[in-house]
Image 1: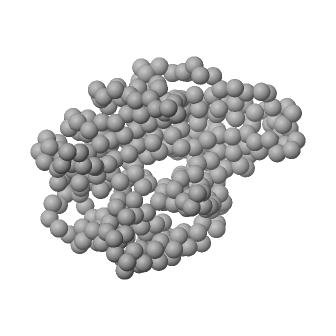
Image 2 (image 1 turned 135 degrees about the vertical axis):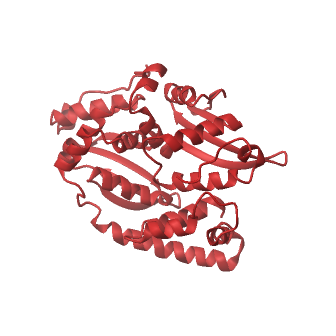
Amino acid sequence: MSLWGATVITNLLSAIPWIGQDFVQFVWGGLYSDEPQHTDVLLKILLNAGTSPIFGFTYGLFLIISVKIVRTWGKSAGVRSISTSEASQRLQAGDLIYAYIVGLIEGDGYFTITKKGKYLTYELGIELSIKDVELIYNLKNFLGVGIVSFRKRKQVEMVSLRIRDKNHLKNYIIPIFDKYPMFSNKQLDYLRFRNALLSNIIYSSDLPEYCRSVQSIHTIESIIKTSYFPAWLVGFIEAEGCFSVYEQNSYLIASFDISQTEGDIIISAIREYLSFTTSIYLDKTNCFKLKVTSVRSIENVINFLDRAPVKLLGNKKLQYLFWIKQLRTIERYYKNINLPSNY
């Protein structure tokens, strides 16, 4: 089951109302100790559950029960959790959690205008694996609006947050994306969405034709110099980043990966901001990918996340915590990097 299974279970635990976060802290423990702890024993059981029929059965049963708890809890997910005035006050105060949300949406979300007969439907949405159920509920809580739903996509359990109410989009979403604009050409999708919504276009026949430009709307320098870029980058890492450890020629190698389709400028800006020297790779699907493994690059990632104005919130946080624990066992990293004692 490896890291995926462990993070699924702990994320589902965290989604249990009132006591979920305490369970997660118990399971994952701290980052500072190299000695075996009760948390390490429990993690080892979770990580090896797939190799044992008994543990595998227990894991499967627990997964079913946990998902059922989360599903039941989500029935009231359409109720607003913060008021319009409170959201406005947080924006005026420059709450960078909203910049994080913009980075997350830029990585994994979408703005769409769908034609349904002669009418139009406006939607902001994001869909993630069930292992990010906690993140979806956190996102709903921060935005104050939206409907959480669950479905299976190719046998994979998915959880999504969708916002279709036009008043919610106008009063809660537009102010966020106006204050913290996106950096990629998804911004052009948003501007089209915004203009049509605020112009109260309701008929599909009145919607102008649209083709997103391939010309980048930003430069590397303009992205890096933007004041909210660090908070945005944490959200983008939550969506598109990956922390992993693998074996190569009998050595354990730690890596950090980040990518985006048609994301040349974005990935280049991240490369420069984090002082990476590795080249960006373009695959056959026009996805720009960056992977680093050197001690200095890994250290730069850790230092950035340690000092960033906001923190990872979902499955990526658990992946990062486990990654740091693994780095403490690899000599080339723990001898040369001042690994954080907490996150």
